[in-house]
Length: 452
Image (cartoon, rainbow, N blue to C red; front, side, top):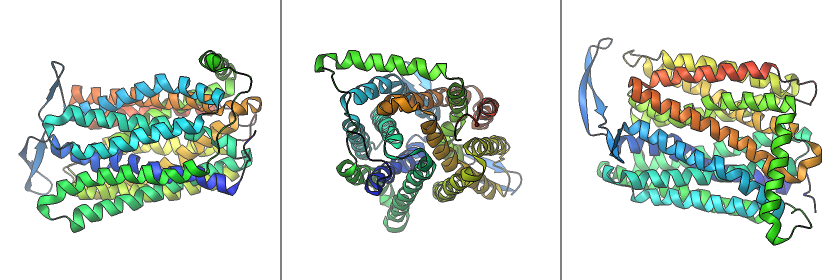
């Protein structure tokens, strides 16, 4: 049985999962948890003189953390832990997605990873001290696996539920829903932490925000689970042959992806520019906190601005694609990302206007972040072979694997450069190289062969 395409109820249920799970991406990955982690791993403060403003200010000092007989900078350790979660997703998602296609269990896998991620967020409430760093990082890894693992199956529904002419619009709708939901919960968390909580209880209310994130993700996802149909399974396969058939499907798709030149060029480009996008998104809060010395409340406001602007960016890119095509929108977005990397490198924390410069850069990030993600997802969906539309989870697993491999490369490079240079700005500059390579390969994608 085929899924009915462009059905409003199904599309609403699909987009609503973005509303549910994007709170993890904003609260846990980008804002409150990284700031909380930075506070928890701060051992002391040192006084630093600002020549521009002729004032002294306090800068946090983070002592290295010893694990497995080695010493790590806390920021680098945070980056490495995320790298570990992405490595797991890279190796597991192609196999799981192939099984999901063969057995019609796409929604079951979506549920499993949703529950894993949301319950891990709730568990972060009990991460209260630097001595529990291993506990906190393990839960952070599990939450990351839950989030990114579920996206493999969520994204793969797009070509199942929407015709090609509607995929740009519906992909953007999902991201817009996600940004709106995430912003709403973040505002609620900030109100609790900054507006209601007494000074001595701010840490407690911060930990409560992790619980709210998990409950939001878990609770709103139930609407998706109740209304999103199961994908049709491949008929004629016995239970004992499921694993074998799944690997045959996996092998078939792998060969097709790399044989088609146009699709191969797009995926190479996508891999390289994803290195920059995802790494900057994951590490932005720690950059603002430790490299710019932005106060936690101002830092969170800047990321809130990023999310709000991202809503506008996703809508504008979807509208622009109708006039110029997806390829040109992606090229424009990549060029802006390159400029953002150079702007981040030249940010000087001693400049009296650094706070406003950071807000401008954050706004630019928001403008292109939502747009490039929505356009990338719908562009790939349009490029899938029509004959294999019943095994979309396996196709999208390769898309997501490339994204995760990009994050592994990016987060490891970011962490390594921090350890070597002691300066995050060089890590940001390194991301520009990835964008430039991605731009190069995007130019060779033949948009005339397909409707992009």
